[in-house]
Image (cartoon, rainbow, N blue to C red; front, side, top):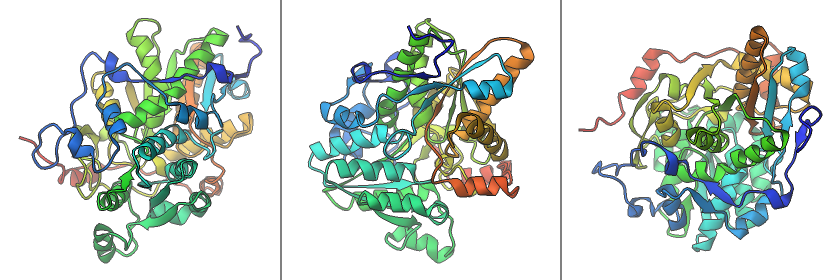
Length: 456
């Protein structure tokens, strides 16, 4: 066992890297509601997903198997950066003068700088295996687009990305990174699709949204039999691939003999949170540990804490199957906050389901508090976080200060899902004192919810 009093960086060697993904569906007390056909409202079958995804991913989407083997062709690429390190944030603990232990699983070591490569690589692999030559997708801040561009390059595939216009303007180097790996990138809404042209005719300066970008990417994918669509979060198979984060973290914490009392994860579409939390939730359901598991989302896009749990479209144009999820309404266009990757109108159906079942908690935090925590973290630990995980950092700081006030030890675990090297404009805004908090009003939610389907 590694000495827990001296270890700050807990590593696994390559031979210890998990070779299976974990499927939480197998262990849930109540199965999650099925996706529905957008026209008939009957449970969607494989044929309804076939224009979008290869059959291997469709099978994973509906699977109830507890473990699914990671193909060798995926493991070979994973080994470029996995296993990823687990750090104990000793300098942050000292800064906060807390008796709590703070651990973070660092996913910024991947080629694209975020956890998104954990699913982009298998998605590209399975599509390539079935003869698909091109993938389309959307991206918000650019982490997912970068990850997919990297993955398609590994298998000699084309990649076309629609990036939310507000982020496309604010984060030009994300676009450059995608182009380095061979992707073509468009601001969304774009002139390339009928839906995009319609929106631009109404508002030439439209800021875009992830829902709109999804609609554009989906419309292009279904028009070409050699093209499929890839999604960076939300769906079951995406969260499945991310569970390698939590599986590794379990092994690493065992090396120092610690078990988390609190697990916090930033939550936009759900992939980072689910990837870390689901293996720990499995252990909790089995009675092996009892951590508090908490989703942390932005106050400006609070789908769990303010959204309604009901069936809605995953995209703005209504092209996708209906999914039961916590939603702010598929017409919702969020303010262009700095955590662009958390600006999605809905929450993963799986995360929504376990939240509805009371298995996890959820809070929202305003962005100024998040960046204040990020500055503390960066100055103590040396890593500049992406804006998205600053929400989990802020929640971890809250927990550490609560432990200090109570005078008790507490083990806190989170996932730092990416670095912020290409998000420095956001930090510049915060340091200049010009960053403002955006709290979503009930009226704005009610307006966006008007278009959500009412099922009989």
